[in-house]
Amino acid sequence: MIVRNTDKYVRHIGVRLVPGDNELSLSDQEKFQEVYSNPLNQHLLKDIEIVDEAEEQALAAEPESIPVPEQEAGGLGDKPDKLKKKVK
Image 1: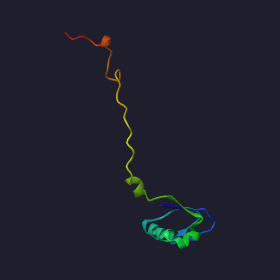
Image 2: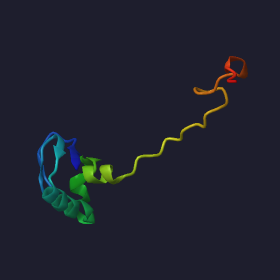
Image 3: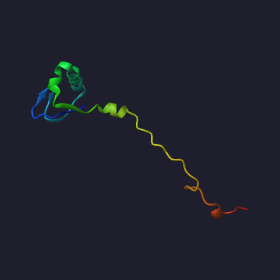
Image 4: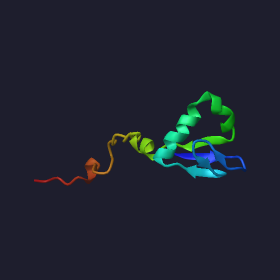
């Protein structure tokens, strides 16, 4: 998880967040989420934003399937009747 501290000061919100982007380990993510979810701590989080969730969640999401258009007549393997050789 990547958390951005937009303030110019270091924040200690369950974990230490320096100004800029901070990548949190799994144990730090749990600590941060515990503090982040508490409504009484919302005033501490005014300059904090979650930039990116855990990579596992991104990898677990299935990629969208790309539709393959059906091959129309006259496509790669098709030849006009005039060019086909007659076999006797």
